Image 1 (cartoon, rainbow, N blue to C red):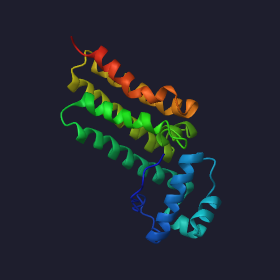
Image 2: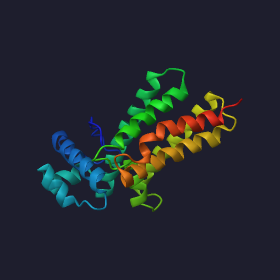
Image 3: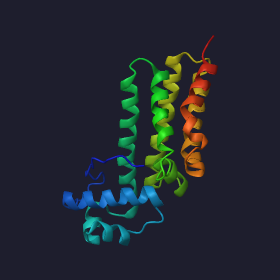
Length: 205
């Protein structure tokens, strides 16, 4: 379920943006629709109709649907790391507790009726072609998650930190998918517990 959004209206490619109010409406609507129904399933016509703006307003801020999709994912990425950093800040100096806190929140979210997994993972599945703007953002998010988890595994003193980090990443991705498949009562609800068991088995004795 997407979190509340503080929209960044800066367009990275230098195009002039639409008035901020219109751009925010467009991105808010696109964010909701893209997350709930998928990026490819949503057309520009539906977005402008729901946002109550014109197509010229959309294209002044987002030169293409691909750029709008990338903007949605950049916002999703920002919110993702805000949630991750909240878990880290809550348990300073304790990466095991940090991971458990982050995954406990994921486990709870997977039990919500409107849960649609991770927007980054979904986008990577929708856009398999390398270099697509949406996939570029998704890959960057996943690479950073992998880097962080491996680094945290080092601090925890794992026998094989890279393998533990990757194992945690696989658990997380599995939770994103199984949360959509099983819903309430599914295995994703126990992702934090399974991660803790994996950590315990990986620590140096």
